[in-house]
Length: 102
Image 1 (cartoon, one colour):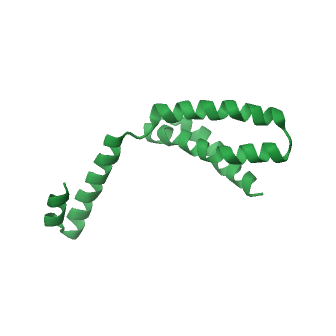
Image 2: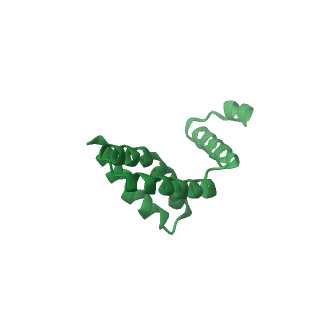
């Protein structure tokens, strides 16, 4: 039952995000789909649907290609962390601490 819930949440949402106009959503569509793939494998294995199981291997490859194309780069993470520090600095007046970190 849990596998069906995971498939229900990750499957349609990842396809919807993959076709979104915003790059941010397209970037995370493949990640979300890959998180749901173990549930697909489990459901196909339990139901002994070998065709679906083999087809799922191709889906994993396709979603992995999307993940590689849109994965978050290290510089994106660094800019996100610096932006978060600056935001906290503006809210909490931690200027001396932030200047030492950045």
